[in-house]
Amino acid sequence: MPEQQPLVLIVEDDSQLRQYLTTTLRSHGFKVAEATTWEEGRSLALQLAPDVVLLDLGLPDGDGLSLARELRGASRVPIIVVSARGREEDKILALDMGADDYITKPFGSGELLARIRVALRHSVDPAAPPPSVVEVGGLRMDFLMREVTLNQKPVRLTKNEFDLLAVLIRHAGQVLTNGQLLQEVWGETSKAHATYVRIYMRSLRKKLEADPTRPRLLLTELGIGYRLKPELDSQSE
Ligand code: CA
Image (cartoon, rainbow, N blue to C red; front, side, top):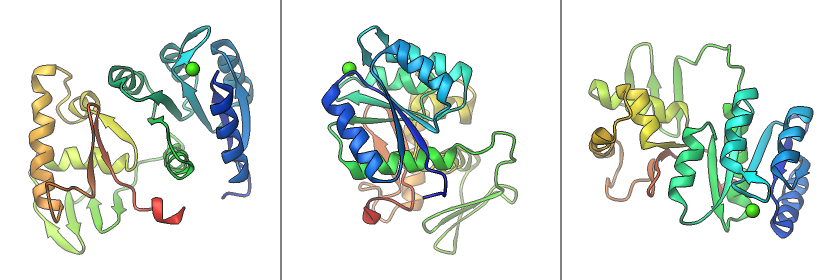
């Protein structure tokens, strides 16, 4: 934990869930601010400049989706959507609208804290140049040399495979929608090409996973997209 405690703004109208979130976060060294409505969420986000926002989609006086868009227009604060299971379209919309991640109810404290840590890690100075080498677990990507190694062994990737893996590793731990991946790698969002992502993900898994049918690195987020598993996770909880 950094010497300054990160401030998490919780925008959630369900008092039980809000209390659970607040208690969990405080006991792990976070400062917490609570908002129970769309309006309160917006004004506290602007006033307090939190380090992370946890955002419920169903708020009494408005739609969390539009609040995500509103906040994204005003700041770069990481937004984690807290969503009910089975609302895949809402999650995709929220992510495409600028949310950084989502967490599905019900969730445990370990998962919650891991997501917040990933979000904090990615909220770096936007003006800083991206690193030329990124390592996650045994996977290492050199963006200047366009070289990939897995446990020190070189892996040969096609251009599209490399570009797709580059997007995933730069956002390690964050979910990326099929639409975001298409846009980043192919520069288009047409649904007709959604199969591209699936095809290239399959070939990446063949090259990087010990068992491509049970991926441990390139995880599927059912109905949403993909997530590259970050190295520090679960076991530390
Ligand atoms: Ca709600």
